[in-house]
Amino acid sequence: MNISAKSRYAVSALIELADRATTDPGRPIRLTDIAHGREIPLQFLEQLFATLRRAGVLRSRRGAAGGYSFARSPEAVTVLAVVAVLDGVAKPQPAAEAGAEGEPGVVSIWTEVEAAVADVLGRTTIADLLERERLAQKHSSMYYI
Image (cartoon, rainbow, N blue to C red; front, side, top):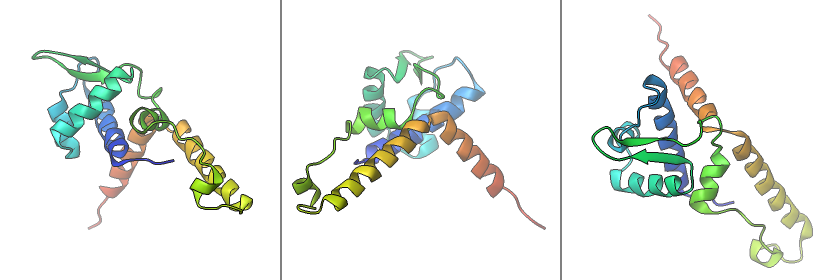
């Protein structure tokens, strides 16, 4: 399974969208706010969010009060769904392409690895990742005198 930089950026931006949406529920979030919050180039983020909108992950509203919001709750959007939209669905490679011709045990280990990665990404939602970030920030803000 190949997870591109665009999928990684998209997941990061979706976490930012989920975070901002919790502070002002029901209001679309401007793309410039998300781009600034995660230091992602705006034009790149526009492309990613347009793709996610066409796939039904996000919805958009035009105008002065416009922006993006989730079409489904962040609890229902898995990382695997985002990766599948942006990178396509992973397909097992034939042994010759996997670089293990004549070594069936080696090929099966890579199939298992891909299945394990897909399982983790399929169980992990944007809401889960937001919660992890919040916990990490909470623990990193501790200081001692």
